[in-house]
Image 1 (cartoon, rainbow, N blue to C red):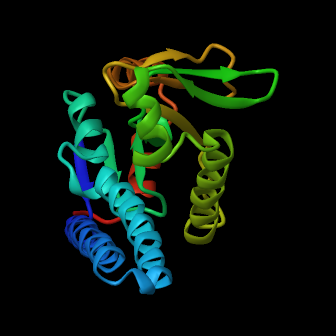
Image 2 (image 1 turned 180 degrees about the vertical axis):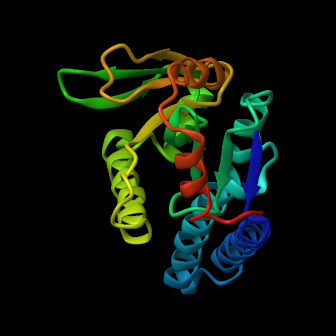
Length: 234
């Protein structure tokens, strides 16, 4: 499998995550110092603490994606190691963050690092995350982003890639179908996704999933070449 990464973007955002976290500590520290040494400046200290808290959340959000190794792209690469050379994995080098192109078709990989019990509530048509103990619950509130709406976010990314193909492929070309798969990278996750409208699985299952979808081939060598020619080579 060939891997194409936007290393410049990864390095830049990693530095932003580090500086944001450092800035958050300084602002929080300043707010606490003011509250102790200058009680009459309560409003100023409160603003500092609020800004520092927001910066902390942003720093942790950025750090989960860009700062901490293994990053989502590194986990995906490890999980797909050994895939056929006809596959190309694009990280931050296509219209969306993680795009896989190969005999199995065009797939958007959406990684999620959350642990605990994750399941799809078909009655409410929503993904939910429960369990994992007190610390996991605390982190869901203060330390990491929630699951959000994987269904809607996947639909949006599918539309983005389809628009990219329609804009850049010739009129005589057949626009390939674009699909999405939710990839849960936490080894301790308990996943129940039988009712999900979108394929969802643990990272260790993705490689076999793609191999099965390659039989029979969804894209020919010519189609793969046409798609990859629209994207960066390195």
